[in-house]
Length: 276
Length: 233
Image (cartoon, rainbow over the protein chains, first blue to last red):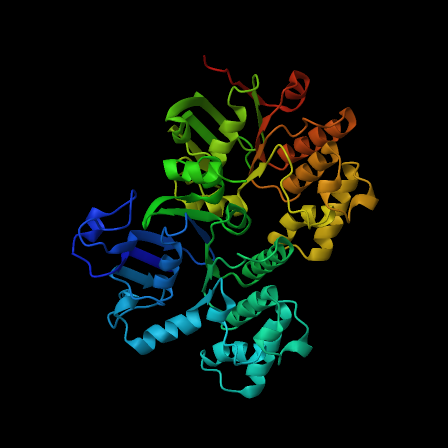
């Protein structure tokens, strides 16, 4: 397995200690202390090259789950394993127990995140090329020529003209900014790409081109992906496997076609029947 | 290659649906399905509409979860995998290499040409793009698709033309077990004949197939085994 989550939880607020047991599918707010259980003991496995979708209503904990994997948020409880991360005895080590520098290395080299809002994924004070170079620098590459040519390589992969490499993000459209995020994310050749609503808010023609691009690059480069989306069309187009979240809990997991054609959980059935 | 070796053993397979959005009503899909399918043979599922034939194919492919029973897929190394209960990752792996599904209707992106649609499965198994396109072209011609249509999206085609593109895509890089949902349903007699000839050639190559047909003449012509599916009252 590339990524393995064991009983991972995230509580916002001063927990009373019983929040995880007092909340669940019906609601994520602890009746005793009012804390919000955004992610409740989620177990999850992602193999190398697998594409997993995460669906659920707003507030179900989808984005938080992604942020816990990418360590944008501290995990309240649970363990996360990443293939190849071992302790001195060669046994797999919970990445949450790694020293900060090791955590940063894992995040910068082996994982990448594409955010719904390009302002979170890009530094608007750097040019497009500078943004991509920043990610390549994190892989310890120091040669200017190599960094420049790799940045250009990924910039052309997202079908952008090389002449625009030195333009700043705010000179690009929303769809183009998403593409630059993709180039930046892939420039470190990550093993795991995390996507948080990557095309929400874009018009459908731009959305289709970006999803096609992500799919083609995933086939070519073979990285694993976890895609959060509330759009079942996006999930159907991109993913092989899907997990369904409700009130912080994982309520169903299966092959994407099975989730869409033969959903088992009452909430998944409601979700699928609400498709337009 | 031995043609008598078993490819799939289905035992007491059953499927029910529980519809929670409709107050938990249970709908019977099918039950008591038993058969063995050797390599190089075609098994036809016959029976009236609504008897559960497509549901059986979808359950074997794992688009539906079986309620009970097993579907043992026999791999070339002699091991068996129960498609009804094995892990999702295992199913994905089998779908990539060993088990294919030709749906009743073409499901594709409206942005991909007919030629690329048919060539894609070959490219995915490592065939050079130029050769994949040449072979796709050959297959489309054999199925009577006019060359001026090759560059267009199949979604602009007639129902029968779409069905032929669908079949071409499904069998151009044939997996060892093919599930075909009404492969000749919307075809005229000539195209239908061509498709049946192609399926006969696949049998020669050792491909095992389960197909749904409504026409007894076609079953008599192509099937080695026929499993009638009855609608339960």
